[in-house]
Image 1 (cartoon, rainbow, N blue to C red):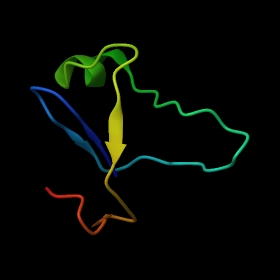
Image 2: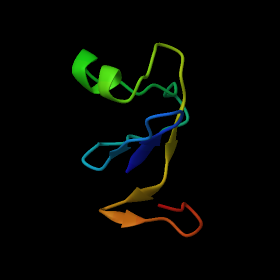
Image 3: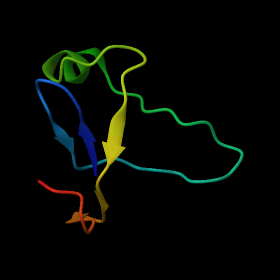
Image 4: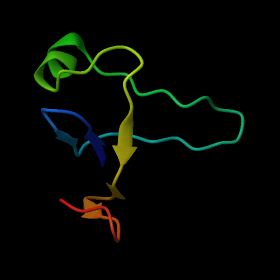
Length: 60
Protein backbone atom coordinates (compact mmCIF):
# COMPACT_ATOMS: atom_id res chain seq x y z
CA UNK A 1 0.00 0.00 0.00
CA UNK A 2 1.19 3.47 -0.85
CA UNK A 3 -0.03 6.76 0.64
CA UNK A 4 0.25 10.14 -1.02
CA UNK A 5 1.30 13.19 0.95
CA UNK A 6 -0.07 16.71 0.97
CA UNK A 7 -3.51 18.22 1.32
CA UNK A 8 -5.37 15.25 -0.25
CA UNK A 9 -3.80 12.11 1.15
CA UNK A 10 -4.97 9.00 -0.66
CA UNK A 11 -4.07 5.38 0.00
CA UNK A 12 -3.38 3.33 -3.11
CA UNK A 13 -4.10 -0.16 -1.77
CA UNK A 14 -3.84 -2.23 -4.95
CA UNK A 15 -0.30 -1.56 -6.18
CA UNK A 16 2.59 -3.80 -7.13
CA UNK A 17 6.01 -2.92 -5.74
CA UNK A 18 9.04 -4.54 -7.30
CA UNK A 19 12.26 -4.35 -5.31
CA UNK A 20 15.76 -4.80 -6.67
CA UNK A 21 18.93 -2.80 -6.11
CA UNK A 22 19.09 -2.14 -9.89
CA UNK A 23 15.65 -0.49 -9.99
CA UNK A 24 15.01 3.24 -9.70
CA UNK A 25 12.36 4.59 -7.35
CA UNK A 26 9.31 5.43 -9.48
CA UNK A 27 5.57 5.42 -8.89
CA UNK A 28 3.37 5.66 -11.99
CA UNK A 29 -0.34 6.51 -11.83
CA UNK A 30 -2.79 7.82 -14.40
CA UNK A 31 -3.82 11.46 -14.70
CA UNK A 32 -7.19 11.03 -12.96
CA UNK A 33 -5.58 9.43 -9.90
CA UNK A 34 -2.86 12.09 -9.79
CA UNK A 35 -5.43 14.88 -9.99
CA UNK A 36 -7.57 13.32 -7.24
CA UNK A 37 -4.55 13.26 -4.92
CA UNK A 38 -3.19 16.65 -6.11
CA UNK A 39 0.05 14.91 -7.12
CA UNK A 40 2.46 16.36 -9.62
CA UNK A 41 5.55 14.94 -11.26
CA UNK A 42 8.37 14.78 -8.71
CA UNK A 43 6.09 14.50 -5.64
CA UNK A 44 6.82 11.69 -3.20
CA UNK A 45 4.62 8.96 -1.76
CA UNK A 46 5.22 6.62 1.16
CA UNK A 47 4.96 2.84 1.25
CA UNK A 48 2.84 2.04 4.31
CA UNK A 49 2.05 -1.66 4.07
CA UNK A 50 1.78 -4.79 2.00
CA UNK A 51 -0.74 -7.51 1.23
CA UNK A 52 -3.56 -5.30 2.49
CA UNK A 53 -2.00 -4.86 5.94
CA UNK A 54 -0.65 -1.62 7.37
CA UNK A 55 3.01 -1.76 8.41
CA UNK A 56 3.81 -1.14 12.07
CA UNK A 57 4.11 2.60 12.69
CA UNK A 58 2.66 3.54 9.28
CA UNK A 59 -0.43 5.19 10.75
CA UNK A 60 -3.77 5.45 9.00
